[in-house]
Image (cartoon, each protein chain N blue to C red):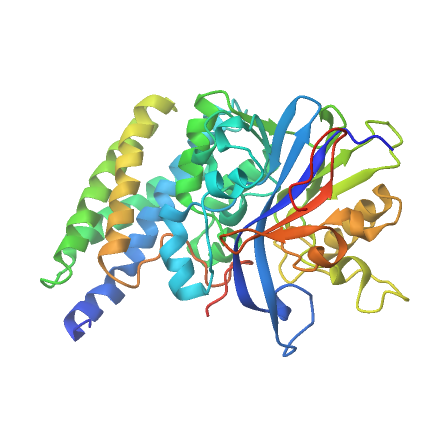
Length: 136
Length: 293
């Protein structure tokens, strides 16, 4: 059972979680292009510009959250995710070096996965309207 | 006629009751059907290849089972083991599109080279740069799959294909189907007599068709193409691709294989394994013994 205060935390922090997940996806996408040798893997790619903007918002919002005892492990994972993804983004700003970016990015995404497992309401993948997953 | 490849459709999980409207455009309020999740094995001519790899149970299994009614997932070493193959034996994998249930299980195939349309990758990344209100365009994509794809690319095991490619293996062709089910979907043709003008072609269509209604309509006496239930691109492109696929097998729609089509069992020999999963045998290479009889 989720108490009211924790439910409020979930609702208030869903966007943060989604934004960090989006930043991780954007960075990972750029790394795929870079590692596959795509000519589109450039530092001014719109995905990278969007990642910087979105990360700023998420990174500001995560420390302002008020987790309940039940939500504290989730919040800890969210803080760690923001920190690691921030490191990955910082590296990306210096150039698309896959090795330097991938390690903190993977660590950050793992923290997001742990966060998703710590409380309901945070999905790793949106299956809701995906073609081969329909709510039973 | 000599067959170069044995071809099997391997079920690895299923949704027992999936709404028809999600599969066949316009079939609202017309009940449900079983939706098997399958991948394809292509064996012969010194090659072991697959079309798609299924989803990663570690990442998705619990949510899919508990919330979305997916049942009976089994790992590739059990599913492929039923026909005497191990995931480590697979050397080439053709990913029809980047949804979690088609490419999520990359890490179980450590020796395979993966083929994916470059457009599927680049449009993914472009989509990610859009505002959150466009997130519908990202449905079915798992960020963890993207990270796994990075590893593949670093290891030189990701081949990004730009459009059609003939003879990626002898007699095996990749065909781009841009802006259809996804940005960079593709289908795989196996010319099983290895002839340029093959009389024995098979098409593995990914989600470009979910069922035979997509390819022949509801009345086999008066066939028509009906779009799939979900397209990120256009339904026009889905229909024109259906025509292209059906033409490439000489008009025999049953040689176009939708991996989510349960009724393959009515058309081809099959058996149920001890795990309750179906193996459907489409073709046997010369000298290969049946895995379903």
